[in-house]
Length: 216
Image (tube, rainbow, N blue to C red; front, side):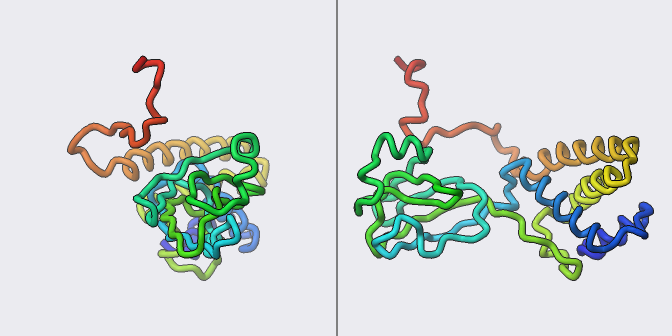
């Protein structure tokens, strides 16, 4: 389903007098709402971060970074970097934030990823992350929509919620909100469940993840 196909479907629901500009605005709002609900697998991406040796910000930080899944120091024995809140970073390692050395932590300032200590030039950190969905245009083909094709109708439902809200049609807005929420639940089942070989479980990969009181 292309973006134009979604626009045509909205027209079939009666929104022929609504401008394409307004419908595109609501389609994008719907897609961003949907993609913001979960760390969906179809939004996962990987990048090897590089550094110039002076800045704590990677030289090739992706512009579509929404949230970090993990960061691994592939230069130094595959160590996993630990996340810190900015306040924690200031309190725990304040003077080390600008010092060069082996990277141990990552934190955010004004939404921008920073690494501490500052990696020396040549350091490579593999980051797996969740992408922001790009802005959709009327001329975009199906592959521009990161949501799997079988769930594109969910985008329609979410868009119709916003369009009916715009027309103060609360009955239909509520109805399509229900369809939208059901569609998201269906997505969780089909998108997340990729193997039935064994039950899903949480795998502990870091000693600090253990509940130390439980093991005391």
